[in-house]
Length: 458
Image (cartoon, rainbow, N blue to C red):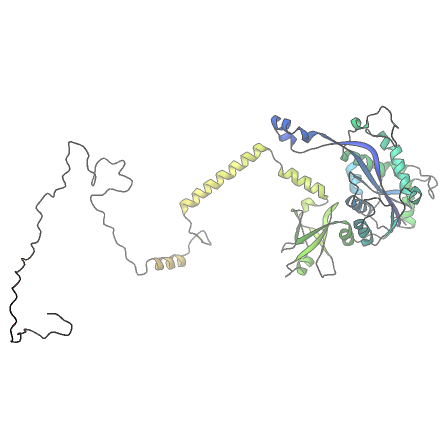
C-alpha cells in the first residue's frame, strides 16, 4: 500500500549558499548603515537535504532544507509526509499532483544524528508506526532513498550555482564559494518543483517499476490498493506538533501571543480547573489545535477564533504580524503626537469638569444629591466671615498702589501711629492703708453675718 513502507535519509549537499541578514536596513540612516555594515555581510554555509520517499511508488513524500539536521528538522519532515501538500503546489505553481496526507506503516533510516534520537523515536512510535534502523554507510540497506538523492544531485544540484562537486577537485578552477548566490527560499522552491513535477515524471528502472513513471504507479496503486490508514489529526498534532504549556481562561487558550483557540467542550471541561493544559499546534496549519488536560484521557480539538489567520503557517503568521507592526517613523511620530494631544485635552477637560472621585457614573442622581446635602449640612450653620477694613485681598498687594491697608513710604508723608483722640482708661480704686496690728483681747471676736462654713474664709 501507499505509505506502508517508507525510507528517509539526510544528505549534506555539496552546495554553498548565500543568505543576507535582512531587517530594518531600509529604515536606517546612512551613518547608521555605515556603523552596521556587519548586518549585510554574507553568511556562507553548507546545507543538508532531508528526504522521505514511498517505496511502493517511489514518490517523494517530504523534503526539508536545514543548516542543522537535528530532531526538529526530522519532525518537520514527518509532519510534511503526513499532511497534504497542495499548498506547496499552489504557492510554487507546480503542475503535478503531490502525495496526499497519509499514515506511515514503517520508516527505515540510518543512525544520523537527526534521525536516530529519542525525540524522533517517540514521535514515530506515537503515530503507531514502526521504525527500522539500518547500518551506517551501507547504501544497500536503504537503496531506494539513496537512488533519489543521487538522481537529485546529478540532475538538479550540479546545475545550481555554488555546486562544489561530489568529491574534492571534481571542478578545477571553479570557485563555489564565490558563486553561491542562492538563498534558502529560492533553493526550497527549486526543490519543490523538482520533487512534484520533474522526478515523478521521470522513467524509473528500479525493482518493480519496469520503466514506468512514479506518478503513473501512484495512480494505479491508489485505485487498486489504496493509501495506508490516515492519521488522526489530534494524534498527529500531539506527537508531531509543537507543545505549549498554557493556562486557560474563559475565552480559551492563547498560543504564540496572538492565536486564540477554544471550543464548547473544552470550556466545559476546564470549568473550575486552575492548572495548566498542554496545547499542541501544527506549525504548517493553524486552523486547529489539540488540548490535553491532565488526568483527562480525552483530547479536545480547538478551533482558531481569528479567521484572518486561517490557512496560514506559523512563519507566515509571524511575518504578517511583523508587517502589521512595522510602520514608517514619520507616521509613528504623527500618530503619537495626536494621541498625546488628545490625552492632554481630555485631562484638561476632566480637570475643569471636576467629576467626583469614585463615582460609578458620569452624573449624580437626585437621591445621591439629597443624601450628600443632608450629610453636609447636618448640625451646621453658615457664618459670614468679617473682613477687616485695613487689609487687602490676597495677591493684590504687588500691584495695588492705594487703598485700605496700604501706607505710603517716603520722607514727605509721616506715619503717625499715635491715636487721634484721648484714650480713657478706667481708674483703679485706691488702696486702703493696712491697719496696725492690735493687741490680742481676751474677749471673743464678734462675727457678723452668717457663720463660716468648713473650709471657707470670710
